[in-house]
Length: 68
Image (cartoon, rainbow, N blue to C red; front, side, top):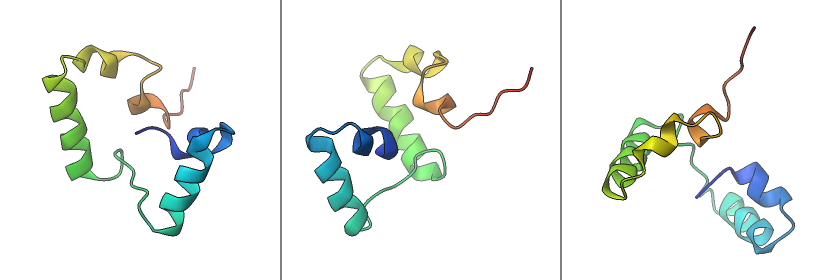
């Protein structure tokens, strides 16, 4: 759904949902799991949202370190 850390820190109902998912070991990283990554790409394509993945603000680049 999104970045677990960001959702947890939001102070909304997401905090409880993320905490529950962590307790049940249901947190997965799409960037570290090829199957989930492929599924995200498939869904983005079906929703005609592939261009979202090209944005620097995209989750694809959320863990990327940049050097200048």
